[in-house]
Length: 457
Image 1 (tube, one colour):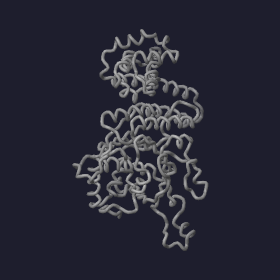
Image 2: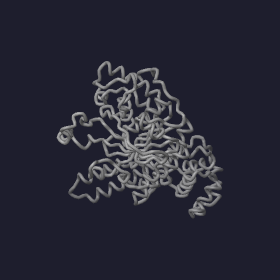
Image 3: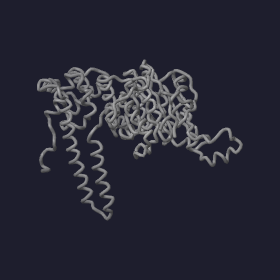
């Protein structure tokens, strides 16, 4: 069995590459599925990589440009010259269904990876040793790594994450989208003028402070309040969890009770109403756990072409895989640069979450600064807007607060009080605003609620 060639399909590989040469739309369908390393025959993989390089530089993909790129890389003669490219096109049955060709190539590549994993597990077994648990853990890790990368998720409309048990009711009166996405926080909108097309907006905070919640607030307000079309990339949290957060926020029902089904009849009515509103919103969620910049670019360009696109939300920056390099700072730099270029190319704002270093926890007060952006100064350089979230109640307990401020009865413990700091604003003023954070429903809001907004119980 092990003397035969590993699984592969040369015809499917050549059909993928040939489709890229003759169909300008094929790249959008194939890029989220394949990498050059997925091809069994090196010449096909080199040619695919040449096509991807052209596409990433916004250059046309055809026989002439691909030949030039292969020659520039010193690979043209190795693949077989112009004759090889001409034969690919000549032998292509049809570019229709290029996704099917790509899936065949990806499947065989996964089978080859399985063989490699099996070999590694065999080596672990032969080495043996007294620590059986460690050996099993290594084997399980290899299997898990293979499974986690075997299937790339794609955009799913939010209604598919919400049980469709209610016809959408009349949604709130929306202000049509007109080029500037409103954040839903009135003072922030006044300072920023909304989220502007082609801007890269960074939302940064320490873990647990609420950056995901704030970005979801932006997404919800754009889609529900303005009728904008929003793409949400969630690299850390499953789509079902995001939908549950949005449903809790929209219905103003405690997320824990919502998850456990312990809500009251009054809350049930609010949940049903919120479900209808969110199901009617154009929010598309991609919860792929592993994502590279070319795949992200292909997905949003396809979404823009098929449905339109007004806002991209990305949670979060450090989980994207960039160019292969041993230097993490250079990798993050290439990612932020690519995101800024993508925002300009699509003419939509991109809101990306970012981690902060531990520096704010080691100084007094714990207010974050631009130097705290984790791993790369290029985040600050490439971003048009940098927003920090600061919550004092994350660092001091109620008892400690009252002990430190015995005479400030008129200024109570700041539970639920958050500060959104505009640390950088390329085209306007910086500053800070104070907002309310409802931790039980993961929602940021103005201190003055809109008329008719239900209070929390």
